[in-house]
Length: 588
Image (cartoon, rainbow, N blue to C red; front, side, top):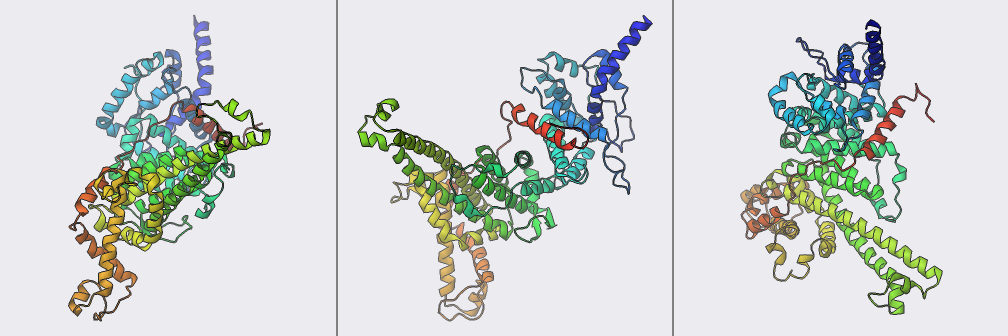
C-alpha cells in the first residue's frame, strides 16, 4: 500500500510539473499588498492532481520594486507561465470542446468586488455546466482564483509601455494579448476594469501601440492600384498587434464613463511619440480620434481589411456622442479624412463601372443573350481575349469590395461629423465647426460626387427637398450642407455689415464698421461661428433637419468575437512564444 501510494504521488508530481508555469502565471491574480490570506488557485483536473497543485505557492505580482532593473523584472518562470496560460486559454474554445482553463479564467474574482462579481460568477458557472470539465471547475469544493484586479491592470499598463515586461515590443504584445484574454474571458475583470476612473493607464499605451503599428502613409498613396495588396510591407506580428490593439480600444470605448472622461477630464501634457504634430494639453479623446484616423487611413491605403476598418469605425462611433472640445488638429484630420473617403467612393465607383463594362465586352461584341452560359460565350474568342475578360472580371470584383469599404468609411465619418455638430454638441465643438468651414469647398465637392452612391434615395428627389425631408443617411447628407450654408450667410453678413462700433464689438469685429467688405482674421471667424452656432438651432428648418440627421446616427457597437477564434489567436500566441524564447530555445 505504501509503495502504491508513493508511486501514485510520483505520477501526480510528474503530471503537475509541466503545469507549474501555468500556476505561476496565475500569480498575476494574487495581491501583493493584501494582508488577508488569499486561497490558492486550483486547476481542478483531478482530485490528486488538484491536491498536488494546491501545494504550489504563487509568486506575488507585481514583483518588488528595486533599484536594479533585473530585480524589478518578472522571473523567467512567470514569463513562461504567462505564455503557457495564453496558449491554454486560446485552444479549443468552441462550445463543442471543453476547456477547463477557459472555465477557470471565467471564475477569477477580487475580494473587493464580491458584490460586483456575484452575477458574472453565476453566469459563468451556469454557462459551463454543460461540459464535464466545466462542472468540476464550478463545483463548490473548489475555491475560485482570487487576487487584485488593480495590481494586474496597473502591471499590464506598464507592460504595454514596453518597460515592465522587458522593454521589447514582443513583451508589450504579450501584455496586450493577456489583457485581451482577461477582458474577454473574465466578465468580472472586465467590469472591474471598465469601472475605474484611471483607464488612461491602459488607454494611452494602447493608443501608442496602435499608432506605432501603423507607419506613416501619405494619403496620396491610397490612389494606387486597388488590386495590389501591399500588406506584405508590414510583418505578420505588426499586423496582429494592430488587430489586438484595435479590439482593445473598441472594448474600452463601450464604456460611456470612459468616453466622457476621455474628452472632458483627461489631458495629456505632451505626446512625445506622436510625430505628425507637436501638441500640448491634448485630451485623451482627441488623441484617440487622431490615432484611430491614422490607423484607418493606413488600413484603407495598404491593408484593405474590412474587419479592421469596421473595428476602427465602431470605436469612432462609440466616441462620437461624447466628443466635445476636440483639439483643432483632430478636427482638421477628421474633416480631411472624411473628404478623402468621399472622393475615393466616387473614384472607385467610376472605375468599377468601367471595369464592369470591359468584362462584359465579349458578350456585347458577340451579341450574347442574357442567359447564355460563360462557356458558350467565350467559345468564339481567342485565348488572349478570354484571359483579358477574366482579368477585368477579377478587377471588377476587387473594386466592388474596395468601394464597399470606402463607402462604409465615408458613412461612418459623416455620422461622426453630424453627431459632433448636432444640437447637443454644436456649441461645444467650435474647432470642428471651424475646420469644416475652412475646408468646405473640397468637402462639398466630394460630398456632391459621392451623393449618388451613398444616398441613392436623394438622387432624384432633390428638387422637392427630398434630402431634407428624409431620415437616415439622407438626413446626415442634408445636415452638414445646411449648417455650412447658414454659417456662410452669417460670415458674409459680418464682412459686409455697416454697423455702429458697439454692434461691431458684439460680433467680434475690430474697429469701426466702414461698409466695405471686411477680411476676417482667424480669431474673428472663430468668434462669429461660435455666436452663430446658438442662432442656428433656432433658425428656420434647422430643427427638422437635426431631427432627421439623428436618425442616421449609429448606435453603440460592442465587440463580438468571430467564430473559430483559434485560427487567429493560436498562431499569434505561438509567434509570441517564439519571440520571447529565441534566447533559450532553437526554433527551426
